[in-house]
Length: 416
Image 1 (cartoon, rainbow, N blue to C red):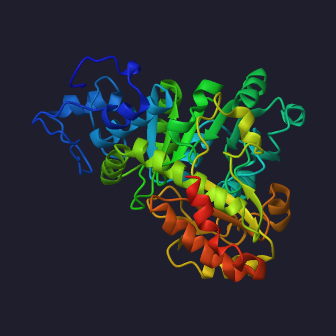
Image 2: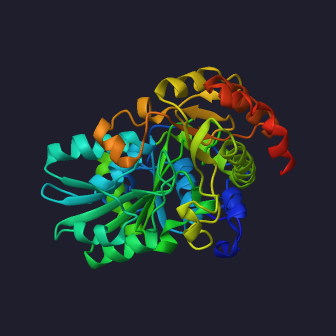
């Protein structure tokens, strides 16, 4: 139970990241206890029977529920503005459990044309095996999207900003169209976190996160979470999540609860650093195109203040060159780590075409705008001088023009 009667609906998000979902511990522990147990003992057979029948609340088995996991679910649900949440073993566990709970053979799903590579593989390779039709569509085009709905369209799935090049989608527009066809809207909000974007306010029915990323923030957990109505979460927990078994471990939930306490301050630093890095890259001759929602010429600007409350800390950019240029630049980095995650304290960089989005066919990558010289950068919490200096020296290996810009770092930093 709550340890006070404060109306938490009045709390600011920074407060919810620390206090949301907190339960009174019988021994007065300030930090949420870790219930590292597989099963729970019953007082007698009648109690066990009542719990299995749903006649009495209580824990049975950690795949079905655990106090540590419950606290995490309540906290993230509060941050996203939903009544309930379900924690999962991975981000893809969240995607799979959330979607499969609401579709069956003969149904149809609309999916944004730019999404994470493994989500693309799920939709393009596995769903067809179960007789579920999927269409990938440019959801930034409202007129075209409206023509893609069918009588059997049950779900609409999107990421915004999208992985890897930050394409944005108007969630309110998509939700309004979906409601006309009684289709649920599912939004992957991993890149933004609930602090910068709350899709429920734009009409989304379900929000998912790879909790591996910003929610945890320390690179030591793989996990996912689904936020939705109490009715939808109950269905997910009692069917796809319970029976397919992609449930979170109590220890992982405890680590994410710890990470959430610093989410607000981390996101502030992430976003400040990302802005300075984006300005540096924009002015560099080796960079042909930069994708950053914080720039005035990015389509996200039309949604700033209404849907989005910040630009986030993921940047994508295309180098003036080919795939060999991209590899050369990445291989000369000294501080920044080549790794495929994001949202960690460390600045991470990767090559989408050969890494996270390799499940896309070449044709699908071209349609989604994922070129061979596109690079995705997750800006971390290091000193901004060190991040930019490392990028500068690596970009110097991209060609003679890039070398002339190594000293541009000081000019950009003076603007910060």
